[in-house]
Length: 267
Image (cartoon, rainbow, N blue to C red):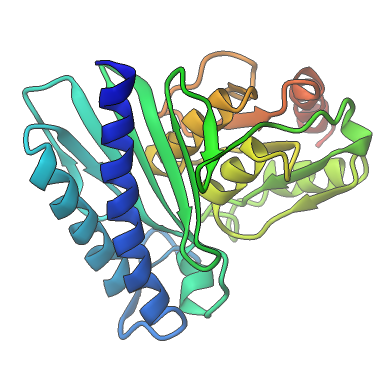
């Protein structure tokens, strides 16, 4: 697939995300139905489902043979080597409460490799997009990760598992540990936006476990193409099914890995 082909794929995905974003903004803070999934802190609404249906329909209209993995509908297999990975509403808790920090994430995989990704923030109308080998853009302008050289000068982001109420470690230990080591740790409720912010240099690093592939597929491409670094918690390659991730500007990456391990051993 050529760079032009990837750019065309990206534009179609961006258009689909923007269309779904209009729907999200219309119902932000006022969904008709709110249900729980894995825990009382893991919410889903009819708008999550409608957004995914809208995105899938738009993508299928151009690429009907591609596979599809969505948070709400699960996996739709394909005879091709391509698979869309979609989170139609990342940050449902914020959405339900009318907090304008949520997003749409779309990634495209070819033979197990992520080749295109986007994260769209409909509240700020910010489109973060990247294709393999093409760099990362924010509303069409090139962006890159920060140059912050050390952890003590950094601002990080993280999230807590939906099972946090019954199992608060290692999440709480890590949070306290890093709050003492860097400028601040933000926990605002959208993994996809955290990754987009690392790609844009707004944040210097992100760490989390117990993630789903749709949480991170789009954002991984953004960080990689913006010059950042992505690994699992031990510094190895990321497996979308394992659900653990460190993203950074690269400069602080080794320190993040070692501090995560140090915190775990001390708790």
